[in-house]
Length: 458
Image (tube, rainbow, N blue to C red; front, side):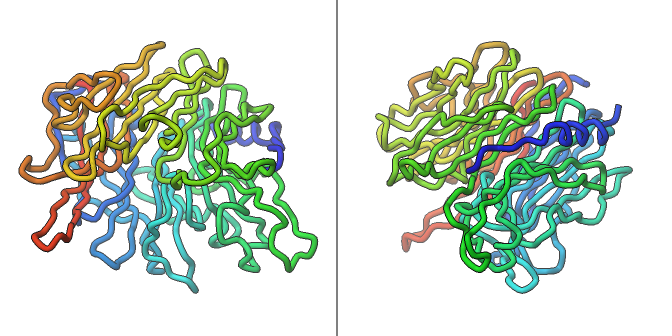
């Protein structure tokens, strides 16, 4: 990708012009939130008043669109409202990974990438994750005064956007960053994958009125406008945050033109450099479990990610300190036949960090394990019923008081995805996607993934 060209004065103006000037957790509860047993990715927010907000993917039935649903709890997760759909726009198109945030004025934003278009309907996409994968269009809704707004499109064109993330700046403004293809090339249907999405942009949200789009790069242009883009300069797995000076810190993955390897690139608000290189061949898609850029209590950036296991003795989770370039192996699988199937990392308040991994063998349960950082130290916790009993790792995971999933132990279950949220006191809770897994006499298998709420701290 071309060097990021930050229009910092304009971007800082957006942050300022859109800005506006807890309780103790109760005894542990676990509640199923979704309704159709066809759930996917989720996100979780505990707002300033202690109200819980959940957004998640779910489809009413196989073959029907995968919509974004919303549910809320006003009693710390003891009971939840019936889910309502946010993304159903009657086009028959599904939606990808959602995000939910709150700005300084107290408004709640639900954001998602819709697949397809009026002419090309896509009810669901398998090759898309939190880091991107499928072209789409960003939309959001605002919850204010107890009612959701209409959906607002966050781009000039349909189907132009690829990888994205949303974050709340220190001023309390919600910022949305994304990669996309050049509009002229998209119009001619020349942009079909992330390899050509080299146009990085950002907008700030002020209720139902998004700001003008600020361009952080300029897209590559072909010699002839009728030709395809001249080179693969695109980016995927875009992630980051905005610092106190109003500068974005970003990571993303791109193909290095010099050696054709896919690499993680880090931008610190002024300069950019590569921090990790995947092998040229043999590595899996990373957009299901993308690297995440987090910041600690000292303002030091960390990239948390899953390095390619084929280059190591075992599957591992790495934390690269971007000030020292030192790598901390948060955990390493040491049991044969066991893999890390999922991973999520979340920024907490005051430099706290949360990492959740889903681990297991080809058969049997996939357990969830958490690694939580506070003030220079990481603490490991087993999050699902048998997690603390398993001896998979180079570092032990202690139990947190007999946590139970909402599944009978006679049924195999698989923890697929998790989203951790912090309340005003710093206590953690999470949403988790869990799939009941059954194998029939004929060898067929079925999964019924659902979303459940669980406490981590009590």
